[in-house]
Length: 74
Image 1 (cartoon, rainbow, N blue to C red):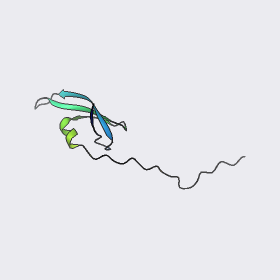
Image 2: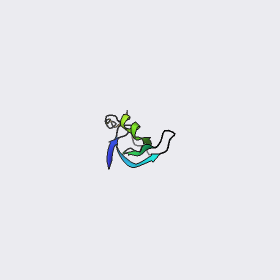
Image 3: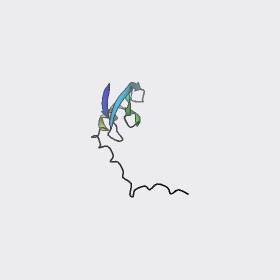
Image 4: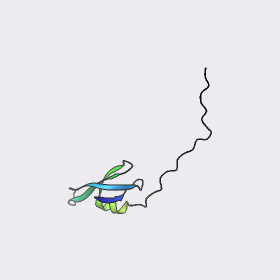
């Protein structure tokens, strides 16, 4: 398993597949990357190296503005 970070959100990600795709300049190695937040990418290995970012903190839970009151009986 090759571990990396998601190019979009910085979360942990895994390289699930490697293949070479033909181009006018010759074959280019590509990887399929899937992150824990279900983002997925098919990108060249050169883009993978440039796209690495530091992991981001998980989002802070949102607290309600006011308490939720139960409905009154009819």
